[in-house]
Image (cartoon, rainbow, N blue to C red; front, top):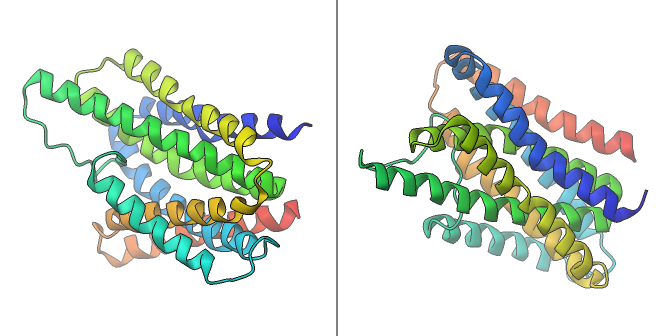
Length: 259
């Protein structure tokens, strides 16, 4: 199968299918959703950290284009700082149920603008995800599959949160679903753009992988883990650790099996 087909298919897995999974998740009764979502977030945390530290960074460091190993950790550090600044400027917006920063007043116009901001931020996020998925596939097909799985793992709880914000902002369920699907298609756009722009630029692929790793680490540490700390009882901590390890192991064994 052509490489571009792999990229398009797995961009759809990381984008559109995660929206559809989130939409199915919303069909469940609210008490059941509230119980399941923290477990999903724990699993996504492990999957993101596993993909970053066990998949992306080793490939970036082993690239023949890299002669000084210090440049990759520096790229990761700059990536982390960049994502922090983007989130500060509200250009990057992550929202997970129980941790949505929605401070809009009850005015309908302001609430609608909050929903629009979520869609813009999510579109940018998905576009960058597509670039990262394509960069991983251009390095190694197996790495591309693992990266796509990690993207999908964190996209599902994020999309559930996006649905919650859109509904809170006054969007009807059908319209919220349609807009989220359209927003998710930017993953494919980012993947195609990266395929044509990066395939003849092998020297920068290790840096793309390093930025991808920093993105996954930032999402896990800055967005997901703080929500896990909201539950402090011993039972919750044990469940979280088990699911985080499960997320890491799924990425590890997927990577090992594909190789």
